[in-house]
Length: 312
Image 1 (cartoon, helix red, strand yellow):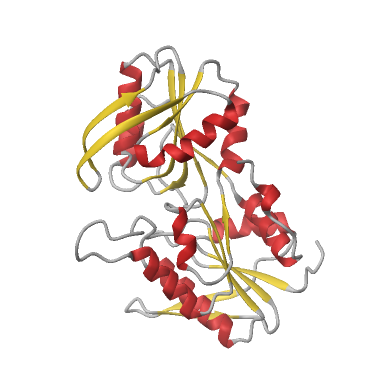
Image 2 (cartoon, rainbow, N blue to C red):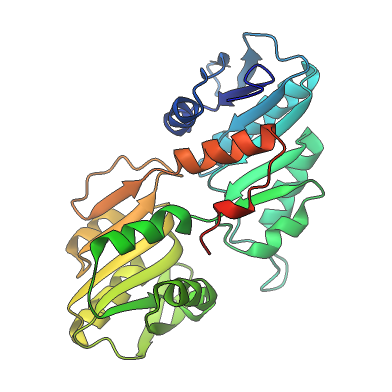
């Protein structure tokens, strides 16, 4: 690609698997960065090559634990102090995004805090994917390239060639995303109306729409404990669905998620590789977004539009 010597790609510890694939797609080596850790858990970042005057792309998802975020902040600070021309944070999964507003008294707005930390540390641009809430883009005063996992997930659904296809949202909040998928695929939309007893615990759930003799694909932005997605799948199978699959951008899959998915009525659940998944589950499939991020980096370097990367 052109301008190959004007940019460098580096990675934090836990997102190296994705950064290596991005660099393979770009046809460039992954930059040499060393993370030295002290016995008490503190760590220091050191670039082992000159980055002066370069556009530096730092690939790091900020999933738990918070070391991943702290690594990224130190990488940004070190790049700024080493005279990088531009610092672009590439955050495939933007953590703390569920805290995008005050939904009850005396709580933090975590997503705004993370945005402030990244901005103060010195980023010039953010490239991310499927934020939990679109308005988080407005928390930044730098350009935000917000990519959509639909670019890889929709072609996968089309490749299945399912008859009587129905797109479903596991909750009312995700209806906009699901409706976009349904319009693109030209199929009906089904909603699940749920109430929660508390965080990660569902009290009730009802299906709004017809799933009998349908192949259902549930669409969501992330799966955490998998309580919602598995309950929705079980209810839809009970209502006569032929098959139930799930698509989600981010594979959080914490706590009992793997066991729930394995024991559920889901035929499969498909994620991107924005977060690494190390557990074993026969129903989990991951599709790489490395090429999509690599193409976005290429276009940013060459000052080209990224808008035609979006399917929907």
